Amino acid sequence: MPPLEVLKDLFFFERGYLSANHLAWRSERPVLIDTGYLTRFEETLGLLRGLGLDPARLQLIVSTHCHCDHIGGNRRLQELSGCEVALHPLGLRYQENRDDTATWWRYYGQQAEFFDCARGLVHGDAVAVGPHEFRVIHTPGHASDGLALYHAGAKLLISSDALWEADMAVVTELVEGVDALHLWLEALERLEGLDVRLVLPGHGRPFTCFHEALERARARLRRYLADRREVGRDQLRRILVYTLLMRGPLGPGELMALLQRTPWFPETIAHYFGGGQEERFRETVEALLAKGVLVREDGRLATTVKP
Ligand SMILES: [Zn+2]
Image (cartoon, rainbow, N blue to C red):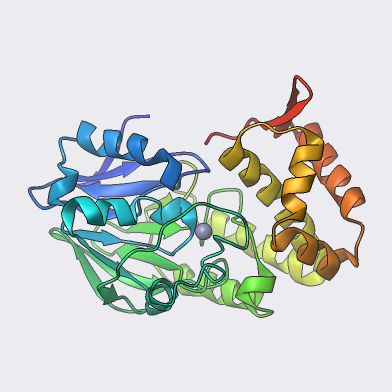
C-alpha cells in the first residue's frame, strides 16, 4: 500500500500488526510519528527512503506510547541521526528507569531497545510536525502513556491504539491497573468532543466513521466490565497471535512451552480463570482456528494476520 499524503508532505504508512502504522513529515529535517517493530527496522528504513527522506537527517520522533510495535526504530534512528524523542512523561520515565514491564516488553516476551527521551508531552500540549501543529490528547487505558494527536484545521485524528475502526487493542489490566477499562472509557470521552473527518489508527486502514468506532469501542469496554473473563479471553487470543507474528509458525507444544515461560501467560490465566493453562490454551487455539486467524501448516500453528 503506497503511503498516503494526509497533510502537505506528511505521509501515513499503513503497516500490519507486528509493526504499527506510522507517519513521516518529508523535509530536509524530517519528523516521524512512531517507528514500527525492531525486527522490521530495515523495512521501515526502506519505506522512509522510498519517500526521499534521509533518516540521518531526522530531527524528531514523536512516540504515541512505548509499546514495541510503535518504538521499534527509535534507538537505531537516534544512533543514525541524534534526533530527539518526544512522548508522554510516563513513557519518558519508563525509558529512563529501563522499565520493561511498564512498556510490556519483558512481560510479553517482545523485542525492543531503550532510547533517550528529550521531551515530555502532556495533555493539551501543542506539538509541531514541521508546519503542522497537533494537539496532544492523553489516552490511557490501553497504555498508561498513550497519546493521540489532533490537527484541528484538517480535523485529523492520529488515534494510535486508543481507537481502531472495528477492532480494539488489547487490555492488560495486570500491568495497566484495575482502572484501565475506566481510564479507556474516559479517554474515549475526551476524543468524542473532537470534530474529526479522518482517523489514522495505530493498526488498520484510515477511516471516517469516527462516532461509530467510538460506540463500538465503548460497547466492548462495557462488555468487559460486565464480565472480566472476557478481558482475559481476548488478551489470550491477541497475545497468542502476536507471539506467532514475532516468532513465526510454531508447533502447539513449542508455543505452549514458550508462553508458560513468560510472566503474562500463567498470571493472566490464574487471575481471570483460576488456573487451567492447558485447557485455556487449547480453547484459545481452537477459537482462533475457527475464525481463520490461525491455520495449521505442517503440524505448526501460523497466523493469517498481516505482520
Ligand atoms: Zn499499544
